[in-house]
Image 1 (cartoon, rainbow, N blue to C red):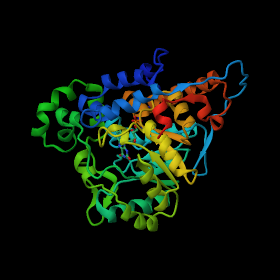
Image 2 (cartoon, rainbow, N blue to C red):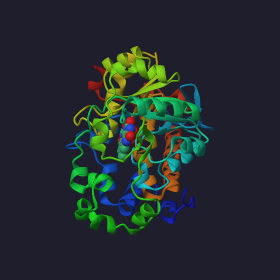
Image 3 (cartoon, protein in one colour):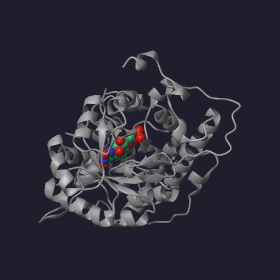
Length: 398
Ligand code: FNR
């Protein structure tokens, strides 16, 4: 990994929120990479709504209560985590920073939580597992076909990955308009000639460009090894996701390849939640892929209560989408999530400064979380429930 020293930019006492890290990321990386990270599908309604919806939930604090110590730890799939958030799979992390998945996994382990490695990852899964002191999960897409997936699952088992996350909301890629405008496809898989129109935005980020070139530029995907062909070349996300679809009929085969816990990620309805349980899920993540797939679906937080109700305690319910503050995490826990996954919140830190940026993001969320609990008069994340929040009337009648 490149230097772990904390660059001055993320160390500054003026960096107090995830949105501050987002601004540093925007200054450090080319527009095509930043917009790939920051953007969503079509009109980005769901992307915006994922964050905005937290404003609909207001707190009911208990004042004049002594909270000498705040307990932030929880258990997910039988694993002890020191905070109720995990790092979500974020594809192409190595484009954001050469240390990519290694930096994120190491930072996650250092705070005592889990990291979920995307199939579309730039570092070998064995190295990612080794570098983290916390649990590491593997997220499965079927790109490269069943043969590539079987070899990945075998490697993940041998390396000691703790769980498998199966993402079910990518039958094709969502229409991420910013990626088309900015030349993301040309950057990752275009010829030099095709890259030329987009060179100015790349040349305007010399620091990123130098580290990208030192890292060897675009490299094949080390965790998608197609039998007889070797590692799959890095391809544009729309092509990658079109080849990645998982259907319920794949679950029998997935279960044969993976005896450990399975998390189904991308559930938005009570029906799909029940189907996931029927297909052997140990946990589900209520998710709309961070507003990057079907636009105009419910915000994740809005979909959470109905899913929690349908699941009725049979499996653990996680959620992801729009988490930018510790108070967002508290609200999701009050509405029944066991823990949340964070995506952009740590990826902005990664793009801003590598591992120190991820660590700063996690530190911000952790201190936010503890402060929110103290302000609420609640001593532990395990004690959070509906009595600490109120939701709009329309949510009650679901
Ligand atoms: C993602 N997400 C994602 N999900 C997944 O299952 N596999 C993947 O490879 C990726 N890749 C990816 C890249 C980028 C840049 C982003 C922002 C997101 C979705 C991710 O795991 C998670 O569902 C969302 O990021 C949650 O929303 P927030 O926290 O980013 O608002």
